[in-house]
Length: 623
Image 1 (cartoon, rainbow, N blue to C red):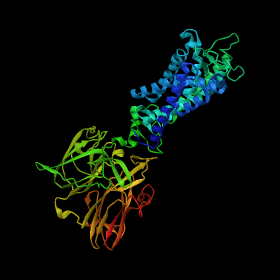
Image 2: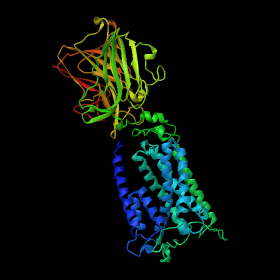
Image 3: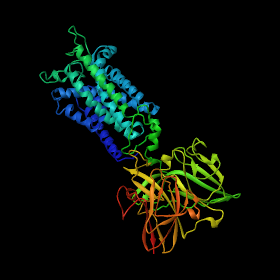
C-alpha cells in the first residue's frame, strides 16, 4: 500500500536490490573463483542488503582480473567481510522466515524475537555452517556442529543484538505496517535490520578470522579445491583461509587457532549481554506484548507518544485511515448536510443511512479520508416534526463496528445507541433499525457512539432538526442556517482522528465539512434576520463562535427554546462538543460580516491564512 512518501523509496530500494542480486548471482556463477556456499552467501546478503551487498561484493570479493582472487581477498578486513557474509546469509535467512511466520500466526513481538533468534541460530549452525561447509571443514556432520557452535554463537549474538532493537523500534514505532509480511515496509525493516546486524557482527567476525577460528574468503579453482587467500599470499594480513570453521581444544587451553578459552568465554559473555540488551531495552519504550493482529497495520500520527503500555486498541483508534479502504471519492465541490427526504410507510417516516469511508475535499487542494453517512460530511440532514413516528434503517459499510446515537433525544433505551451498553455494536456489513416517536423539538444531531473519539472525529455526525408541532412556537427568521463544527488532522498524505493529546492536535477546521474560503457565503439584505444553529459536532475544543456586525439574540440552548424573558443579547457563544445554540442575528449594515471561531489558530488552514483566514469562518454578505 502506498500510504507515506517513503513507500516510493522502498519500491525503488527493492528494484535496486533485485538488480544488485541479479548482478551478483550472474557474476558469481560466471567466473568468480570461490566455493559455492560463499557464492550463495553473497547472493543472499545482497538480496537482503541491496546495493550495499553489491558494494561489499565488488570491494571485497569480486576478482578484479583473472588469477588475482587470492591476493585481492587477502587483507584482514576483507576476510572479516567474508566471515560476516557467511554468518548473515544463514542467520538472517532463518530470522526473516521466522519473523514472517510468527507475524502471520499473530504471536506477540517478544515471542517473535525469541523464535527469530532460535530460528536464525539453528539455520546458521545446522545448515549454513555444519552442512554447507562440511566439505571444506572435513569430519562428520555432528563433529562440525560441535566445532562450529561457539563461533556461530558469538556471531549470531552480535548480529541479533543489532537486528532486534532495529526491528522492535521500527515495527512497534509509528508505522506498524512494518509488522505485516504482506506490506512492503515489513521487508524494508528486515533489510535495514540485516544491515545493522551485519555492522554489529563484523568486528567480532574480524577477530575470529584473525584468531583462525572462522573462515574468511576462499578461492576455489578448477577442480573444486578450496584454498584460503593466504596460501598464495603468505605474508598478507589474511593468513586465515586455510583454517577450519570450527574449534579444536589444545593442551595450552586454546580452542582452535590462537583463541584461548578465557577469550572465547569473554566474547560469548559480551555478545550475550549485547543480545539480551537489544531484545529487552526496546520493551522500555514500545509494547512488545502486541502482535501484528493487535495493531492491524496502524500508522500513528507524527509526534504521537508510544509507550510500552499503550494498548493495541488505542493504537488502532488513533491510527490513520487506510487509503485503500476508501469506497467512494466525492467530487471536490460536493457539499454535506443535504436534506434526506424520508419515505412514508404506514404513516412512519423512514430514513435510510449508511456509514462508509470516503474521500472528501475540505478545500479544493486538501482531501481527507473520512467516515461518512450517505457519502457526505456532515451526514444528511434529518428533518422531523414533533410527534412523528420515525424509523431509521442503518447499514454499516465500515471495516469496523459502529452504532448511531441520537444526541439529546428522549427515546426508548434500546434505541439510544451506546455500543455494548444499550445495543450490540453493528458489525461490518451489518444493519440495525432505530425506531421511536419524536417527543421534542429544536436543534439536535446524531453521531457514532462506538469509538466516537475516532469515528465522530472522522465525520460520522449529522444535523437532526425537529420542528415543533405548533408552527407558531418556533422562533422564525428570514434565513435558517445550520453550522456544524469539526476538527481534522491531515499530515503527510494521511488523515488521523484529531484528539486533544500529544501528536494528534488538529491542523484543519471545518464548518459543514468545508474550511474557509470553501465555506458558504450567505447573501442577505439590510434588515433581514438569520437564525444560526450552532451545533458542537466536533470532539475536542470549546469554540467561541463570534458574529461581526452587531450582537445576536440567543433564543435556544441544547434544543430547548428559551422563554422570551430568558433570551439575551451576545456576540459570542462558547460552543463545546455536544452543545447547541440557536441565535438570531439582524443585518444592520451592508458589508461582509464574518462568523468565526475567536481562537485565531482555528481560522487558519494548516496554520496558513488564505484570502484573509481559514478554517472556522464564513461570510454573511449583506447588500
